[in-house]
Length: 77
Image 1 (tube, helix red, strand yellow):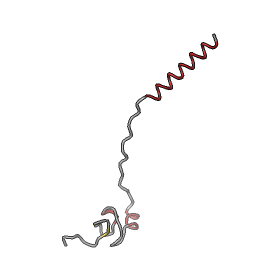
Image 2 (cartoon, rainbow, N blue to C red):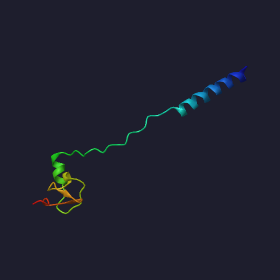
Image 3 (tube, rainbow, N blue to C red):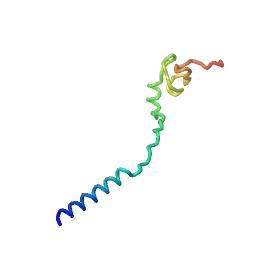
Image 4 (cartoon, helix red, strand yellow):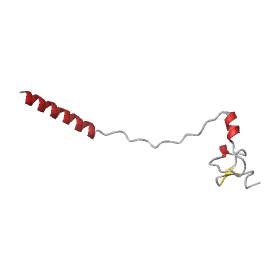
């Protein structure tokens, strides 16, 4: 009798484990990049000079990032 109980518990546990293993999990969404937010003080301190490398306009002291470099003026001027 004890053997049958142990066998039933073992089968029940294996059945539950197989169900959790086969359960569909939600797919992870690709992580969206968030713009950095800085206080005006740190924004002013961290601005890059003309000629420095940059990724967007907010990184340059002139607010002009062209071809990954901080420019002094736009091409139309």
